Length: 183
Ligand SMILES: [Zn+2]
Image (tube, rainbow, N blue to C red; front, side, top):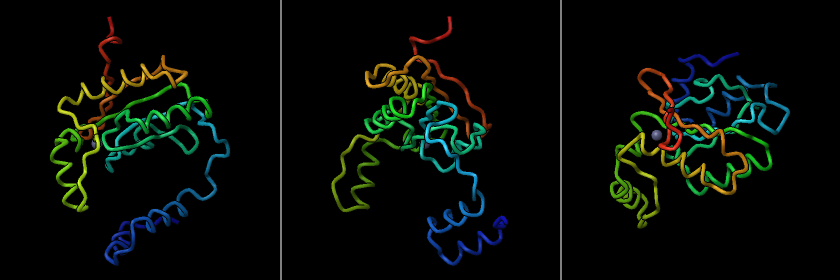
């Protein structure tokens, strides 16, 4: 049984927590379909942005059990991302990494100073952590590819590829870091 759009709207209007809503969806949609094998079947790890418009599974046709998906603001190759990928490759035997950034990303629209200010104002605590803001979206992908390809903790670095996802056209375009440009 699926939850109709009207029912979801109705639930929303009662101000039910989003977590409770998605939990209910998971029970209805994925009952019994969880994969049994802990290692990703496609030996693939994906790094992408937390943006709610990026539906990685739908975009790539992934099923539960297929791939690791690591998400953060911007889909940046942060220290925490590197930690997750190190586990993904060394322990769960993934061998390929897809870095997917997208158009209209908030980290490209706001500066570090603007976000620092907003977070500080909203929380009441001075915030100055590195957020990975960028002004050149393609350059940001290239930077993340270079960082991952240079990371000594990743045993499989020959198939790390970057993509720009255009939200308007729903298309993925590969981005080549300078050292990997096609000849
Ligand atoms: Zn984003």
